[in-house]
Amino acid sequence: MTSKALDNFLNENIAGLKDQGLYNEIDPVQGANGPVIQLNGKDLINLSSNNYLGLATDESLKEVAKEAVDSHGVGAGAVRTINGTLDLHIELEKKLAAFKGTEAAISYQSGFNCNMAAISAVMDKNDAILSDELNHASIIDGCRLSKAKIIRYNHSDMKDLREKAKEATESGRYNKVMVITDGVFSMDGDVALLPEIVEIAEEFDLITYVDDAHGSGVLGKGAGTVKHFGLEDKVDMQMGTLSKAIGVIGGYVAGKANLIDWLKVRSRPFLFSTAVSPADAAASTKAVDMLMESTELNERLWENGNYLKEGLKKLGFDIGNSETPITPCIIGDEKDAQKFSKRLYEEGVYAKSIVFPTVPKGTGRVRNMPTAAHTKEMLDEAIAAYGKVGREMGLI
Ligand code: PMP
Image (cartoon, rainbow, N blue to C red):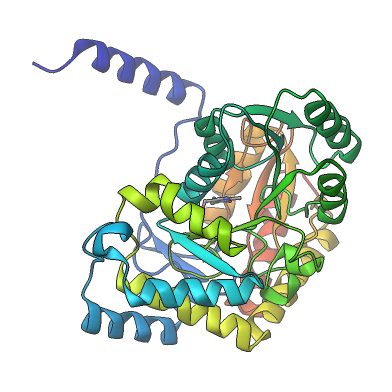
C-alpha cells in the first residue's frame, strides 16, 4: 500500500493551488521552440522563450550536434571525474573562458545546478552572502545549500548593500563574505549596478559573483554584463547558462584558474552527476564561436526589442524600465494580467502572465521576450493583438 500521508498532502495542496488560480497547467509545444510555436494545434507568435538569439533552432548548431552524435554517441557515459570528461567538454570550457575573458571555465548540466554547485563549493557555514532580494531561485537555493549566513539587500540599493557589507565584514563573525547578483533581472529587464557593486566589493574584500543568465548574448555586444561594464578582472565568478542565448542546455562558471581547479574537486554536481551530452557540448561550443565571431544576431535582438517596446509604448501600455530587450507589459491586477495573456493567446500570441509571488502584488504583467529570430511582421502582428486586447479590456 502506498502512503496515505503523502496522498493527503498532495491532494490538499494541489486543490489549494487550484482554488487560488496558482496551479500551472503545462501545454507542450508541438515541435521546435522558435519565434512561432504550435500549441494545441494552433500557431502562435512566441514571446515567452529565452531563446534570445534564435539559436535553439539554428541550422549550423543542429548540424554540429548531429556530427557529435555520430562521432561521440548520445551520452557522456560517466561523471566528469571518472571518465565522462569528453574532449568536447574541454573544448567548450576553453571557448567559454575566451568568451568571458577569464583564465578558465567549468561547465555544468544546467544553469540551476551550476549555481547550486558553485556557491556551495566556495562558501560554508563560517561565511556570509550578501544577496540581492530579487536574485533568481537557483541563487537562493545555492546560498541555502552552502549554509552560509544569507543577508538580503534591497534590490539594487547600493546604500543598503554598503551598510550590510560593512556590518558583515567588521563584525569579525565571518571568514569570507560574498556579494551575489543577477547581471540582468529577468522580470523587469533591469541591469545590476555592477560598477558600484565592484567598488563596494573592493572596499570590503567581498567575493563577487554575477549570474549572467540573461546578460550573456544580450549585453556587451553578446559577451555579457561584466564585459558591458569592462569589469572582467574585477568579478571573481562569472556564472552563465547555455540554455538561453546560447540555445542549448548547461551552465558554467568562468574565472581564475585556481577557482576552476577548486570547483573541479569540490562542486558536487561536477563530481557526482554526468555531464551534458556530446550534442549539447558541441552545439554550445558552436554557439559561443558564433557569438565571438559576429554581433549580427545580438544587433537584431536589440533592434527587435526596441521595435516591440516602441510599439507597446505608443499604444499606451506601461512597459516599465527595462534596459534590455525583455519587455514587461505591466497590467497591475493579477487576474487582469492572466486574462490579458489568455486573450492574447486567442489572438495568436503566446506571452505568459507573471503574477505574485514571482513579482510584487499589484504588478501583474505579461512579459515579452523578443528574439533575434522574430521578423518585423511577427512583431507587428503581436503589437496589433496587444492593441485589440488592450482596448477591449479598457487598459489603454
Ligand atoms: N539564473 C537565472 C537568473 C535564470 O533566469 C535561470 C533560468 N530561469 C537560471 C539561472 C537557470 O538556468 P537554466 O535554465 O540553464 O537551469
